[in-house]
Image 1 (cartoon, helix red, strand yellow):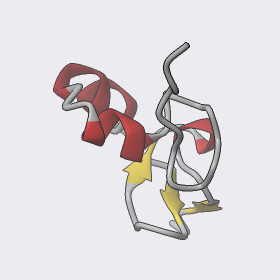
Image 2: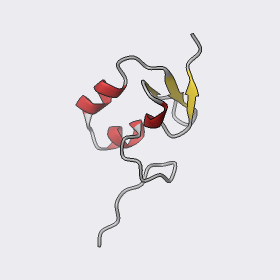
Image 3: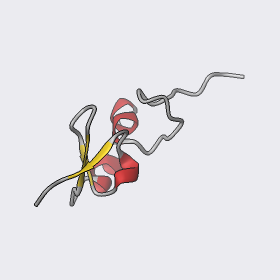
Amino acid sequence: MGNKPKCRCGSDEHAHLCMLRSNLLHDEIERITSKPEFYCFICGGEANCADNVCEPAQIKK
């Protein structure tokens, strides 16, 4: 069986922003970043939901 790629944080979560970027899923990236409320402490990427980044931190408003 082939190895499935893992996120840089070690997760199998393929909805993380960094995994979507590496797979060039631009439509999905646009959908999950339209109203960002969280950023990734590792890469700084911003997403609507904490589940879409490796190390979420809330964006202070």
